[in-house]
Image 1 (cartoon, helix red, strand yellow):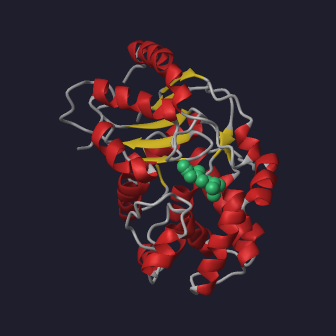
Image 2 (spheres, protein in one colour):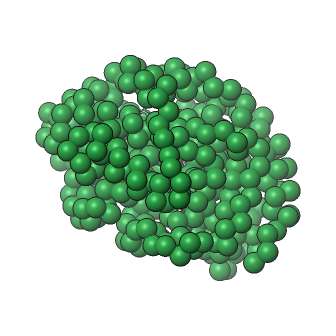
Length: 321
Ligand code: DON
C-alpha cells in the first residue's frame, strides 16, 4: 500500500482543532519533574502495517512512559513465566478507584491485587520481572522494550529522582503489598524497579510501533518478527479496554473504543486491531497510535489527547465495538 497524504493532512488539522483542550487538564504536579513541562504540547503518531508513519504536532520530544510501562512490564513478565503464573498473582478486575488508591486493599482484602494497571498491581508485577536485583529486572525489561522498538532506550534520571523523592504513597502501597505477602522482594527494591520502568523515555513513534504490535497480537507486521503470544496480547488488550484509562475506561470504550494505556506524563499507547468491515478505508488493516499531551485530567489521562482520539476514532471508524 502507498503512503496516504490525506491521512497526514487530516492528522495535522485535528492536532490544531484539539490543542485547546489542554486547558481541561494540568501537568502531573505530584511528580515535580513532570509538573514543570509545557502543558500546551500535543503530538500524535500513527503507523500502519506497511510501516508508514504519520506524525503531526509535537512528536520530536521524548517523555517518560509512566503508567504505560505497566502494560509493557505485564507483557514482559507473562512472556517469561507464562500467563497462568502471572494471573495467579494479579487479577484482571477494574477497581473503580484512583490508580494509586489504597482503599481497595483495606476494604476488600483481596488475595491478589485487582489488576496490573493500578499501582498496587503494577508494583507486584514489576517485582516479578526476572533478575535477582532491581538493576537486573530493569535490564530485562529494557531489553524486551528495545526488542520491540528496535533501538536503545534509556531512563530519564531527573524524572526518576523526582518520583523517588516524592513517592510516599507508592511506598505506603508497597508496604501493604509486603504485609499481604504479595511482594517476594524488599519494598525499596520493588519501588526502585517500578519507578525505573515509569522513567523510561519514549517517543510517540515508538509508542505507535508498540501499539501496532499489540494490535497484531504480538506480531510485528513490518519486520515479520513475533514478540509475544496471541493469548498474552489478548489479555493485555482486555486490560487496556477495562482498566487502561483508569476511571475513564468506560467512557473511553464508549467514545473511542480502542484498547489503550495512558500515563501521567501525558502519553497514550493505543492498539487499533484490523477491522475488515470498517466504514472507511483509513487503517482498515489496523494501526498503532502514540499520543503525547502532558496536560492530564483528574483521572490521569491526557486531556487533549483523549479528545483527539475520540475524533479520530469517530471519523475513521476505528472502534472495536
Ligand atoms: O506511580 C505513579 O504515580 C506514576 N509513576 C505513574 C502513574 C500513572 O502514570 C498513572 N496514569 N495515568
